[in-house]
Image (cartoon, rainbow, N blue to C red):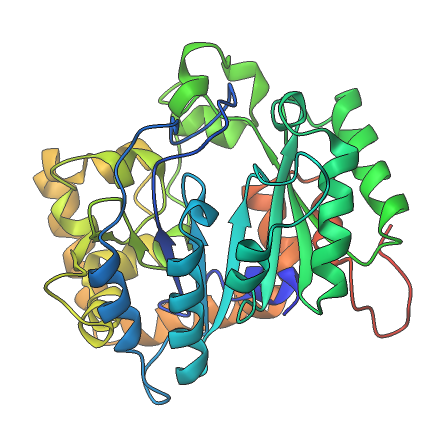
Amino acid sequence: MRLAEIIELRPVPAAGLLATLTRRCPLSCAHCSTSSGPRGEDTPAEALRRFVGGFTSQDRPEVLMLTGGEPLLRPALVADLAALAEAAGTRTSVLSGMFFAGDGRVPARIMRALRHVAHFSASIDIFHEREIPRAQVFRAMHHIMESGTDVSFHVAGTTADGAYLADITTSIRTEFRDQAAVLVNHIRPVGRAAGWAAARTVPLRDAVDEGLSEAPPAPCAMAAWPTVAFDGTVTACCNQRVVDARPVPEHLRLGHIAEDDWAAIRRRCQESPVLRTIRTAGVGSCADCRGLARRPAALDAAERAGSRPAAGAMDALGARLQYEAGAASLLRRYGSDRYAPLVLLGGHENGEAPG
């Protein structure tokens, strides 16, 4: 499964499920959005197995994305979830910080965990490279590619025109001959980076999210996929402030994996009037959205707009148009505009890479 296929589905309500497996991670990267480290909570394993085991061929997400922390600290759980998902027709993607690749090899327990995984992505940036050298990450990724799994890289940089992003993207393209897609993001002042990342390191739309300027309402594709947080709570948004907040803002809380099944979570995601309004028209910045409960008039307006007879059709139309616009179009809004075409690398029909 190519990375572009996953990104294309991102605006489609309930087309995917994001699941965090643990907040633990052996690495201590200075920009970690989840502030992960050697100690941290694990998402309840049996509740996750039960929840994913409830997928059916008639009612399932297209994609299950496993992340953390470092999800491969729980390789048996990764293997179980991917196998359960595959049995229902759902394809699994794993995002790893590559803690295991210090010698360039992939341990047998990791390879077993990836047996039912359709896509594997490695995080690499200037902070990861201080702990796991680039050459070793590349060597391990070659082993995973050779096993038949499609691979990609998630790259983060401080500025779009920085020398690091130019160097690492060129290095990946050369090493993997354009057969590994690259998703480039900019570092945000969130998690461990909150104490040092300045507003100048992120695009204007993220400065808006931090309350540094006013934001006009705009459709939000990030309110489309349910996200399983570390305690099993399911949110309608993957924004780290939403995932970590307790209580979760009521309009962004979809349920809990110990109490609800996929069908209930999917239905709430697709049919919530407020979420429909957020996806089709927006309610301002991310901070505005998180704070809707403190603005009763705005919350009521979003509820009314999303309850109109045509609201469901408008939601579906907006998702379809974004899907048809493609992965690069979405990343121009949410990732790096300059490097957005790199998400299309790998598996080209005509053998040519994007520029």
